[in-house]
Image 1 (cartoon, rainbow, N blue to C red):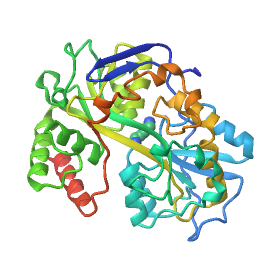
Image 2: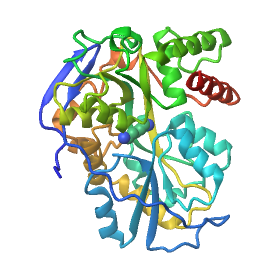
Image 3: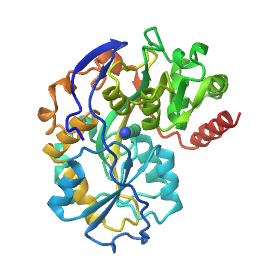
Image 4: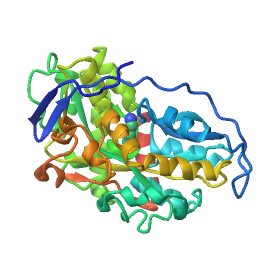
Length: 366
Ligand code: N2P
């Protein structure tokens, strides 16, 4: 297992996006967690912590470091979309202590009453967060969440098959690559990419715009190899099954670590910029351990190790001086202003969420 993710710089290629290299992360042992959760939380084994996270989202040192420091053993399970995480929590009894929802999902979860309020006095390292990542609209007082990492969702492609610079989402609709295109199995991301391609906001609730996006996704579907989870899409590009994949930036960088000819781009029409956050689900068996874990992640050194490994954006101001220079200078991680301005954050659309879900189900079953 390699410890350094950054082996070379291969900077800005297309529309402010570049490619970087690093090593892949081996996923920690994953076993289903079957602890029952009690109503008000607590009551679990204080020496165990259940983390429910996106895959490839901790450094090699992150969990062993916490276990060594606290004597608390961490069990990690994985999900691949915010909607999967929400469904799991709503089904109840997950026994998870810490989860990592994105921006809009923090808002949905808070309204759905599945989150515990954070006890800020137990998270003194909150002060390390960059002010740009504190008090965001989805949780203005950080009552429920603390920022973990941030990144983008774009396109990874193989230039040996796609012999033109990819600058637009149009590439994902190009018949030349029929059968070699993968989109995310993620309602907001996939509708979002399509809405951006059409020049609309990825938070649109305009029925005419959504009808148009749905019809475009239905047209795209026969060209697709499928809808995938992001890490799987990266693997399929590496393995040659896909020429173009819609995926999260860090998963693209993991794929590039295996084949440095691959390129990650943020299409010119714009894309998603997301912020993921640590939160504690209602009924967490070990809320004290959960607060300790959140505080540990927000430590400057731990935060730097995390972002140096995941190759996502570091929201920890105190950690920033320890972020690898190559990463800091990489515009596919920290996009320049003209690219950044084109990125949009997915918002909680309230009732319209159901409309998106119905439409995505229709697309997938078309
Ligand atoms: C981590 C994926 C992060 C997530 N591999 C998207 N919000």
